[in-house]
Image (tube, rainbow, N blue to C red; front, side, top):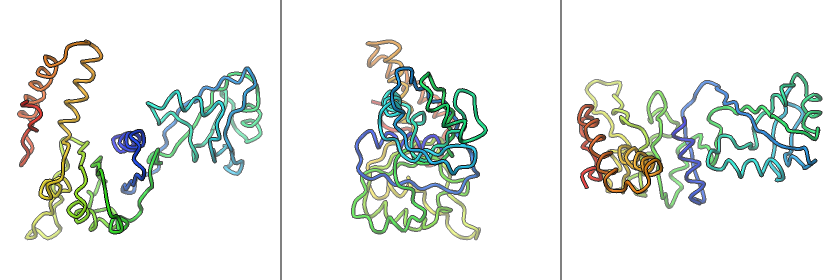
Length: 262
């Protein structure tokens, strides 16, 4: 989901060397966007494309030049950056055949390139089809808990490796979804529900960043942009409002983070 894509993009920008991503099965959904390239001066697009994708073009590689310039200008919003695997479906409103698309891309004028991307395609990171890969890790710096699959974290292939990995490697755990997903109930009513990844992180004494803390810091950053110099007064105002909201919608077993009381 969006939280997971944002987390991967942020980890990439922070320079983490290896980013692993796991998600449950989802129906095919496409994210569509437009890339505007000015070729009036005759520059090169800077992409390798394949022509065997029916009536569209598939981007195989971004090599530099004008598309790389577009991507660099949109680093803060990586979903708008053209990347390998994207599909070009129309250029300047023209579509219908590979020949038409290539002809438009080769013209020296402003190009409005309509691009489609299958949702869930990684912006950064390696997609894990099986969490058994966690067993081979000797270290894990950060674990981001974004939106769980519809059937819960236990529906991921190899999910039995997730909780032991948290206990063994003690990563910093970042929670991005609030309210947090409840414990998954076992099929046997007499069985005890498994702990959530967040609960296991607490038990393992990992450093944790709770979702309300992220909400608080984002709100403070926005207020500081809108009202420069608001500083500690704005932080107190946001903390009071967030504490009020959390008290009205309590989550069993969870107390508001101490950051809001400082």
